[in-house]
Length: 345
Image (cartoon, rainbow, N blue to C red; front, top):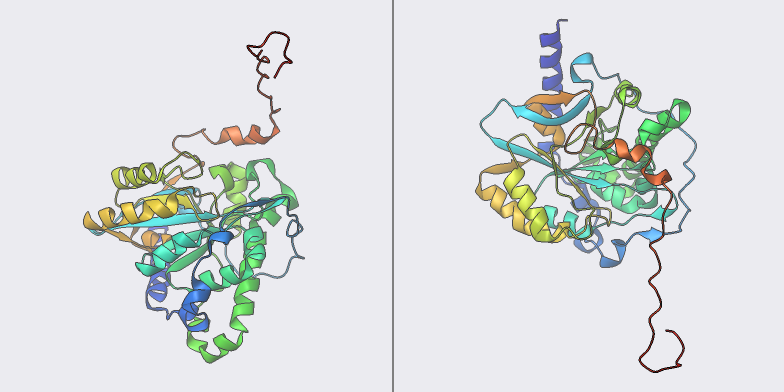
């Protein structure tokens, strides 16, 4: 098969996935009440010092997969559309590192559901293990595409061998275990067609910190996962990034075929407040929200040989960022009171 024929075959496969997602019944609505699906404010904060989920489970056999072919290897940043439709993909990361429990920003998910907005959620394996009910709800909801965001948000540029493979395969195991549990539930037994439509595995991957190198790219692609980056970052991990600033970035910098990144794990500061500002304005401009797989099916992915945030090399800092010594700020000189002979403050 020549390169063009292979690429067309792959696009047809993506189109089939997109069509299946478009027509899939809503198993989440069938198996959970509205109250059970609704986010709770106490779920959003990140909890430090909780190590209950630091140790990954024993590896299990994964659903069969094939390595990504040459035409799609590398880091996909956006899609050149083959249609006049103004399609874009919202993506939200659900990551969690060791020694903590990340949050669940239900206000984001609730807004997307209320307004029928599709999104792709890049979930870490550890996050899925520590949020089992939410994971199953998201898997069961046809609005959302669930994708791989590494196991414990390690920098894959610094890993090799079994550690590298485990960081990539851990989320696959967590997803497949959650899907199996959902499929075996009493509710799924009553909705067999909906349960059978659940994807058997994740097919997309996002690198923690947006940092990769050739060995980690190869490892991801060899495990049958497309490496998905972004061409528009909302900057929402920064606490001082206001809802207005996030919304302005979305409105002013979005282009047809864009992939936008935000966070829904309690570190998407002000994102929930930004969506009601940005999404109606983007819709007024004619933009339609699709999953990443649907976006890929609608055009040709723009692929780079490395990963970065805004410009090549800007994520290399994460190779040493967490090993730098923390320098405490100088202590201010003690002040004297206006009363002679009184002690220093």
